[in-house]
Amino acid sequence: MKVKLRIHKKETRRFHLLLFIILSLILFFVLSFLHRKKEALPEEKKGVSQPQVSLIPSSFFLNEKREIIRGGRTLTDILRPYDLSAEEISNLRKEVKPVYDLSKIKAGQELRIFSSQDGKLISLEYDIDEVNSLHVWRKEGEFAAEIRKIPYDYTVRMIWGIIEDNPISAVIKENERSVLALDLADIFGWDIDFYSDLRQGDTFKIIFEKKYLLGEFVGYGNILAAEFTNQGKTFQAFRYTYPDTEKSDYFDIQGNSLRKEFLKSPIRYNRITSRFSRSRLHPIRKVYSAHYGVDYAASVGTPIQATADGIVTSAGPRGASGHTITIRHQNDYETQYLHLGYFAEGIKKGTRVKEGQRIGYVGSSGESTGPHLDYRIRHLGKYVNPLAFNSEPVEPLRTEYYEDFKKKAENYCLCFKAPLVIYSLLSNSAIQSW
Image (cartoon, rainbow, N blue to C red):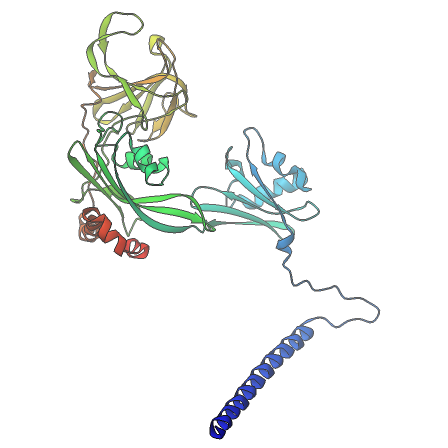
């Protein structure tokens, strides 16, 4: 017992000694830090009180206001309450313009304004697009600015499902949002008409990015790979970014581009109410006549997109056809968009448009029983059935990158073949590294 007691006392003495050394070191560093802080401060002058040094950053005291830019409001209107004269706002524009032209800020976008407690402007932020953000702040009596990348965090997820009603319902069933289904339709929009070709029992698989900002979900990134089986035929898409140009596109496993000269449809996900026909009972005139287009029923204001690159040859009222846009394309093709409610900004005769560009909005102008779009295609002056029309694909994957592409695409295929087993074994970082 005595031996054990001596050992215990010995260990206790060691513990106390170690604790004393640690506390001494902590005290030494604290005193050294305070001494350095004192030396760094200016010497006190007799009879003059020195300003107190605040350990709390001034940014903690800034007021933040998030303002949605309304149509017709100018930057002067927005910044007038922040003790800025018209001359100062003009200088702000000039000093920021080499970085970004503030006249380009868009209605509907958010402007974040930071001001001091007395209401003076300190800085502002404006998201230029989904990737870049403009930051403006006061610096030595002037304004400085820079464009920064928005610091998103990305995770990768995979979902798969069966079409029972429509893709939107199927995606929502997997606890994702409807926009993901629309993005999926955009990828396969050259091969599958999501308004007429879908069947109950069709299946899909999607590997995609989710975006977070400060831990909050803010939207989707890119779809990295997708598979869609429609009426027994399987389509695959793999996103590939060229290392030299950083341009991205979707290809099938053989390296063929999914993009073609024409999109399958001018509207994203709506139902067909009337098809191409040489003899159809006209809903208003009650006589049989040819119907050279496809009618897509949609609510008023639904966006309409150009199905291919081209030049607008006419845009205006056209009798029974209502507000109509006609676009001329390569190889003697022409598309027509009838019964529009109104045109998109800048759409007029002579305007060049890109495939997928918004050109107008659904309405019910002309001889129409309700809001819809009548979409037509002509080749060499003759009408073509849009639902039976198959356009040519654009350029395939560049051959020098095919081996790199194939390796990455095959890894995604492993997930498609056994999603429940393989995907559960793969981390987000593993998928992203492909």
